[in-house]
Image (cartoon, rainbow, N blue to C red; front, top):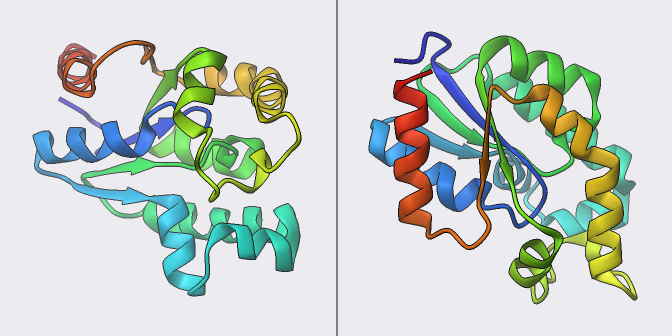
Length: 172
C-alpha cells in the first residue's frame, strides 16, 4: 500500500491535519503523532509561550528536531504544524521519507475553524482572517510542491474525508 511507511499531513492551520490524521492512523492501525504536540511535550510549555520566549525561529528549530526524530519511525501518520514546510530541511526530510498529503481548505473555512483558538500565536492579530490569507498566500506553493496527494476539506465531514484519503492511499 505505502512503500514509504509514513504518511504526513501538511496544510494551513485549521485544515484538519490532526483530526483527520488521527483517524487515518487508527484506520491503518498505525501510530499517530502531531509535531506541535510533541514540541509542547518536550518543552513542557505551550506553543504560544515558546513563541513569546524564543520567537518563531526558536519554535521552528524545535519543530525540525521533532520532525528529524519522528521521521525515523516506521508506520506512522504525522500531522505537521502549518509552518513546518517553511524550512527547506523539513521539506526534504518529509518528502524523502513519506507520502505527503496536503489538506486544503478555503480561507472562510480556515477562519471558521480557528477563530476561537487562542493557542495559535500567528493569529493573535487585529485581523486574523487577513492574517490567515497572508499566511496561505505565502505557503500555498510550498504545500503544493510537497504534496503527493491533495485533498480539499471544505464542507466535508471528517468521516467522508478519511474514507476518501484511505481510498487515495490504497490507489497511490
